[in-house]
Each structure stands twice: as C-alpha cells, then as structure tokens.
Amino acid sequence: MNSAFHDRRSFLVAASLTGVALLCPLGLSAPALAQGGLAPTRTMRGGSNNYRPNAPLVESLGSGFLVHGIVRRAGDGAPLGNVRIQIWAATTLGGEREPRNHGSVLTQADGSFQLEMMQIVPNFGQPHAHLAYDDGAYQTVFLRPVMPSPRDVSVGADFVLAQA
Amino acid sequence: MSRIGKVVTWAVLAAAMIVPIAIAATSPYLAYRGPAYLVGGFAGIICLSLLLIQPLLAAGYLPGAPPTTERRWHHRVGWAIITCVVLHVGGLYLTSPPDTLDALLLVAPTPFSVYGVLAMWGVLLTGVLVALRRRIGLHYSSWRIVHNALALVVVVATVIHAIQIEGAMGMLSKSLLCIAVLGATMATLFDLRIIRPLLFRRGRSSQPVRDLASSED
Image (cartoon, rainbow over all chains, first blue to last red; front, side, top):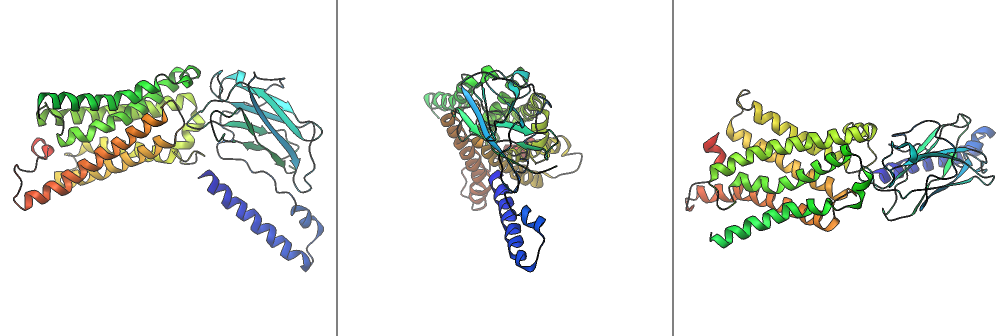
C-alpha cells in the first residue's frame, strides 16, 4: 500500500517534471527550471507518530544498530551540513514513547548523518524508524523507513529538503 | 465417534488453539513491551485462536457435547471475541495513540491495519445485531445470512491482518492457525449453507438439517 502510494507519487513527480521539460522551449522562466531539479522528499504517512520535538543532541542512544542517511537541498542536490535530524524508534529499551529512544544528530559537511542506537524491534507490526527534519530553515519532513527484516542492524533514510 | 476419536479431536483442537499462543509467549519481543501492549497483543492472538473453535461450535461438530451446549458456547465465545477485540484496540491505543488512531481512520502506513479495522467493525456489528436482533425484528432466515456474511468478512480480514504482522507470533504456527481458521470457516459455511440444505431438499438426509440456532432462536 505504501509502495503503491509512493509509486503514484513518483509517477506524478515524473509526469510534472516531464511537463516542465516540455514547456521549457516555449520560454518558461529560469526559476521554473530550477524547480525541475532534485525533488524534495515528502513526509511519509505515520512519520510524525510519537514525535517529541527537540530531542537532545546525543553521541549515541546505545549500540548495535545504525540509523543513517544523507541530507541534500532540493533542486541542485547540494549536501547540507550542520542540519539537525531527530531520530526515534522502538528498541530493546522500550517503545517509541520511551525518552531513551529519542535523540538528535547533526549532519557532516557532506550531508551525511548517522546515529547508533539499540536494536530496533518490530512495533505495531513493522520494524521501522522515525526521522524528522523540523527546524524551520527548510520545510518540515517526517520519514518512517521500514526495515526489510527485523534482524537488520541498520536502516537508511535520505532527506531532500525544500526551502521553507 | 469412538472415545479415542473424541479425545484425539479435542486434543488436536486444543493444541491448534494453544500452541501458537504458547509460542508467542516465548517471543523475545515481549521483554521490550509495556503491559498495555502485552495485553493488547495477546488479546489479538487469542481472538485469532477463538476464531478456530467458533464455527465448529456453531455447526455442532465437536464430539461429546450436546448440540445445545455447543450452541451456548458459540454465544459465549462470541462475547469473548468482542471482549478481545476491545482489549486489542484499547491496549494498542494506550501504547501508541497516534498509530492506533491512524489505523482506525484508515490512514496508517501499514497495509494490514485496514483489514484489522474491517474485522473489528464486522465483530462489533455482529455483537450489536445479536443484542438487538429481536428488537429490530430481524428474522432468523435473514439474520443467519447476515451473520454468515459478516463472519466470513471477519475471518478473511483477520487472517490477512494477522499474516502480514511482524510481531510476537511465530510465523509457522501463525500460518498454520490461519489456514485452520480459514478451513474451519469455509467447511462450516459450505456444509451448513450448501450441503445440508441440498440433502434436506432432496430428502436424502438421514437427519433433519441440524441448524441448531433455528431451534434455539
């Protein structure tokens, strides 16, 4: 269901990009061209569930499991450094509302981020993590990546952020 | 049925219902869950298990008990199923209100949620109709069609819901229980609503259509 949701969205994005490309020769302005670059990541359904704003910046939330990704800017795809990403998940420490399962990290200059935490365990039927960008400079995005297997020891999620 | 046959039948049924629950009780995930999640999760598992015996009681297939007794237990198990559904949804709500509300509002990202909600409404509607059937003047002939249709929806939706969930249940025992639940439901509906009426109409039935509810209700 989720994938169908995304496929439809990808189709709409692709279709609108194609439309923009087709209109370009007709003299569309430069700003419209810029929008035709890397499309922003859309918030996923359920992504903001059990969000606790302003999770503290942490070195780690435990060990054995890695949440990672890259943050880039919509349009030109430039990596965004020093951006705060908030992460939470149900782990062996407890559920998604357990404070010890909430933490923030800052991206490196190359846009990458990673947070080591305790093993994520299936919660409400799916092993998944939650990630948020919610700091105002760019539009807020909530992600909810699902692990292909509950035995996985890492999960990735990338952000493409649009100017607020 | 011989005495040994009866014992074997009940033993197999009890094992089919209890072993999947016992396996779930050994899941390492339980250590990471709070009381509300534990109660909610096991209420769901017990509910799936009860769906196995429920059609068998309705049809009076189980040996060693008079049909009226089985009918009475069908009624009791029905209320137990409703109770389990309420505990399941309530326990999940206390564990994570936003996830549960998303499911109830049909906007959850998890594909199995919509089947769980469908089954929930099927169970609750059945309970309402059982309580109000006489008051609203629903005749037995109509009621049993409505009840059977709702039961089929509940069973199929519950099985799809259960099979897609990664949780405390063991995958093998869960799959086998789901197959058994589907089989028991299909066999009962086929027998009660197709085979027996046909045999009865052709006058070849050795006994009248044993539809116990018609005598009681």
